[in-house]
Image 1 (cartoon, helix red, strand yellow):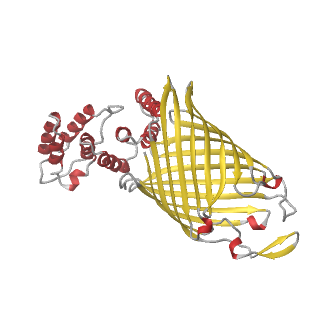
Image 2 (tube, helix red, strand yellow; image 1 turned 90 degrees about the vertical axis):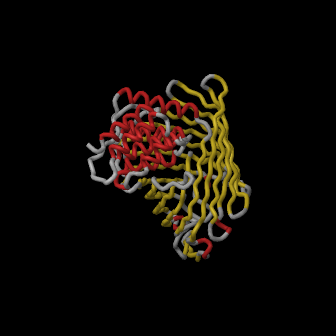
Image 3 (cartoon, one colour; image 1 turned 90 degrees about the horizontal axis):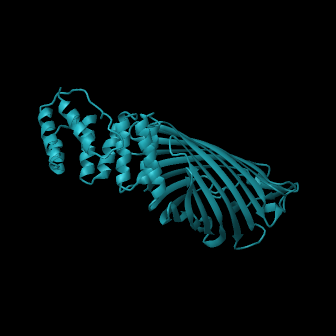
Length: 441
């Protein structure tokens, strides 16, 4: 058969790549071409056996486009790209193969290994977990779980960047109503108090690092920042934060105990300061992963004491990888704000369920409906009843996974929300659309 040489060549690649498991590479059906594929395959195999990777790559590129697109040929092209220090090219080749068949275990593991070699631990972790959902043999499962544990333990520098342009139908989360009744009397709302639409430019970045201390104990450090430039300075919103503390293991549970602080600005002026402590627990290094966070923070506003509060929060989530192309996540959260004034104190509960699914053409989609309830302790100054809100939201984001520019991948997202409140001024709808790019490594 014409592709026998390449199947054999892929076997050479498998033996040379430091992969998790030596499984069979994908194969292709025969095709006709004026170029002798057997001859090219033999030449490339000989060059690879001598470690002449660049010459082997050049020889392979002589094949016609139809042959270059064959899965087994792309597998070898990816291997050569890795040997030549071209991880982005290798990722592209592996991703094309997975777009054709997302259940190719060997290719999924090679993709994860490539991300790991490039220092992109988060992408590597994601693909290792997708591989576990393919029900691999026990030996492969053990090795992949060991890789995941290694990633969790080393936690070297990690960065993330995100930039987006977002048309927003309600940047100030306000009502459409023109009139508000206070103790039964009608009052007309100004334009500033009503819903305002606009387009915002948002940026966000974070960095984290762990430093070995003693044994398995490490010092975890992290910082983050975000800024949203809305139309009109009065709605500009920005914040900077920092956290630090020990990270250690209790059996199979990783524990982070941290102090944290942040500063927020709104409308170009200082708004508030927050400081507190947080404990983060993570366990489950296989197909299911669980995460829990408990925090206590002191919130102090620059102007006015009534809203100053102690905020206590708890959050739990579970992620379950269903297959090599799909996973879901369930999140439950509860907050208590104990403010100086009862009118600013409230309980908050939130639940969400998200689903990730890869699609053809290098696309992937994330869909997440959520519900949130907020109950205040006492009526405000201009109301005879305490505020009660229920917000329903549906968020979706579409990623183009195979488009990468200097590590950035584009996405488009949308979120539709409806807030039901027993106070008219807090009853509103909102639609926000995002066009952005993100990079995490």
